[in-house]
Length: 118
Image 1 (spheres, rainbow, N blue to C red):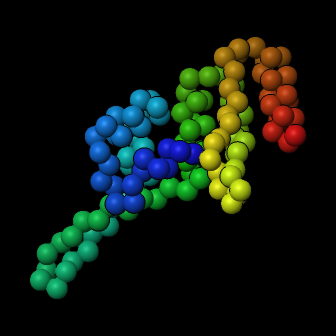
Image 2 (tube, rainbow, N blue to C red; image 1 turned 60 degrees about the vertical axis):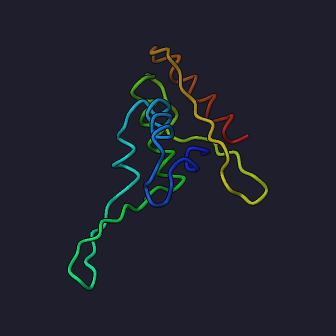
């Protein structure tokens, strides 16, 4: 969830951070997924384009899990958030397995769901 710290509110992200996000998420699709542009016209008729961050913890979790599912045949449908004393998600534990066997998939997901509840 520390990724959210790299996603600035106005979308002016230093190139180094963009490169880090591209490498970590293995795609640059996060730019269009987490930001949208709004166009407004000022008093003089000039158009102003504003980038707005549109990402919450759940949206970021869904994006990361979707990216993991492009690599691994087994990915649990939700992560386990580790929170701080204020209840804010600091880390997200995600379960993925590289073994495509149906039996292993069923057992691995059952164990991951059990661990997520504990």
